Amino acid sequence: MKIKAKYPIFLALLLGSSTIIGYSIEELKNSNKTVNFSISDDNTKTADNKLITDIYTAEELSYLDKNPSYEDLINAVNNNSNIDNSYNIKDYLYKYIKDICSKKPNFDKAILKRNIELLKLNYYSAEQIKNITNNEFINAFFDPNEHSININNELKIEDYIYHEFSHMTRVLIEEKENGVVINIGFSIDKYGKAFEEEINQDFTNSIEYDYSTYKVENIYLLKEIINEEDLNDIYNNHNIYSLEEKLFEINDNIDPNYFINTSDTQNILLFDENINNDYDVDYELYKMYIDYFLSLKEIDYSNFVENYDKFYDILSSINTDNIIRDKLIFYLEDTYQKSLTKKM
Ligand SMILES: [Zn+2]
Image (cartoon, rainbow, N blue to C red; front, side, top):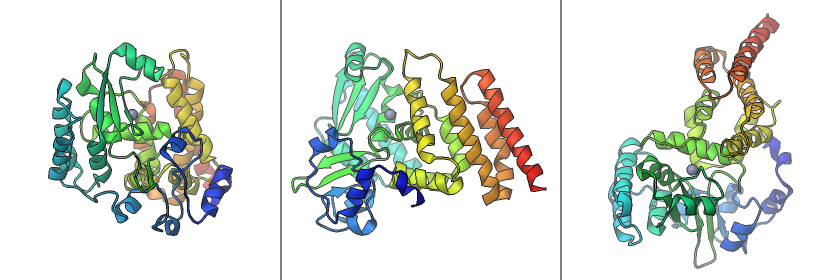
C-alpha cells in the first residue's frame, strides 16, 4: 500500500471510521466520493457495515447467492416479467447464459443473477439514445443504478447486446430495505472506465463476439505485463486501486494514477467526434506500456524474453498513426538494447 498517499483525502476518512453509515443510493449517485474502494477486510465483514463493495461480503451476508447454476439463471430470466422477447432479447440472454456457463464454469455468476432479477429493458431510436447519452457513438448501455439495458433499436441488437450482459456480471448497485447499500464495481466514478470497458470487451469476446470499438488491444498488452490469472482476479474481485498497486509493484518509477488517467483520456477521445487527433495521447500511453513491460526483465528474465516477440507483435498492430507506431517500436527496441549494454 505504498501508493496510498496518492489516494484522495476522503479515503482516509473512510478508512478511519469503524462503521460507514448513511449513504443512500441518491447520495452515491450524486457524490463524487470514492465510496466503493474496498475497505479493510475486518471492516467490511462487520455486520453493521452499511456499505458493501465486494462480492465475497455480499455473499457472506446472504445478499447474493454464490455460484448460481445454469438453471438458477434461466429461472431468474423467466421470473422477471420485465424481460419480454422484443427484438429477440430474451433469446440472446438465454444464449449468453448457456455460453457463459459452458465457457466460464468457474466464474461466479452471482452478480449476473441479481442483475437479471432486477433487469428492465428500454428501447430507443438512434436519435433518442443520442440525446440521453450526449454521444452519437453509443448504441446501448447498462445503467446499474436503474438496473436497465438501454438499446438503440434501429441497429442490429445482436452485435452489441452481449457487451451489456457482460457488464451485468460485474457491476451491482442496490439499496436494501435495512439501509445496506451494495456498490460493487471496478472503476471508481469515471476513474478506470477505459480499462473497465476494454476488459469487458475482451471478456465478452471470450463468450460471444463483441462488436464494440473499445481498444481491446490495450488488454492484450496489459496481459503481457500482468499475467492473465492475476489480471482476472484484479478485475473480477477487486477494483481499479488494486490495478494501481499491481502496476506500482512492477515499476515504481511510473505513476500508475497517471497511466490510468491517460488510458481514460484515450478512451474519451476515441468517442469524441470533435477531436480527430489523439496521437499524442497514444504515444504517451503506449510508452508507459513499454516501460512497464521492460521492467519485467528485472523480475523474471526468462519469462520476459519468451514474451518479448509477442509484446512486439501486439504493439506493431495497435491502431494509431504510422509515425507514432514506428516511434514506439523504436523506443521498445532501443530501450531494451540499451538496458542490455548497461547490464554488461
Ligand atoms: Zn460498455
